Length: 303
Image (tube, rainbow, N blue to C red; front, side, top):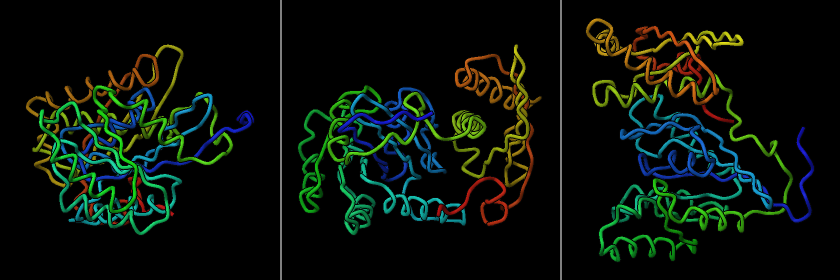
């Protein structure tokens, strides 16, 4: 049951927009208070519009973590970028996240132009301030000029160290209108557990294989069986080439064992219980180029 919101309560949807690898997923995890979005040193980690929910005594903020906006190179990329653009039009506030360790570039200006065409309130967030050089004035000025041009508010923070996150959250609440509770106060995401399980497996593949296996990996959770003592999860890792399958399995199955062990630990934290995880690897040629394959694996253009 969703309780009735108290008088003056605010609520709304906040789209986290930005280039790949600026720390959007890390930011969402820290704001929500637990891991719901996967992170990786590799760009383009996020694929789905993942919603994280933060409820305080005065507001409910529903964060929409979007894929990084970039030049697409395949059908999957086109779907991801299109979904990010749709998110800009369908939220109450846009949080435009940039990398505060580098000056404003062409990619940032491209996104700023997209966002600037909407009437949605925008907050420009400079992330990674913990990694900024001592003399960061020129970096900050490049973004200050961008914000001034569009009349956006600016906030600096570090998702990694949580510096500035309370100020960011308060600024976002100020942008919201009075509204209802959309979700129960104790809920942190609207995504089903199976989806999060698949993402946690994919995260370990990205972390353990790095550049050897790019983003031609999709996870399908085939079966989840729950008993009082253990949860059994069967999942298929879909790749595009036989060589990728070989890398994922590794010599004597060592790599697949490592991926499974690390993913099992993360899934156990998610469900707060013991997990048995069995992984299979399947070759599905050119799945990223096929709309049918994309739909089967859960990637589609949002309405």
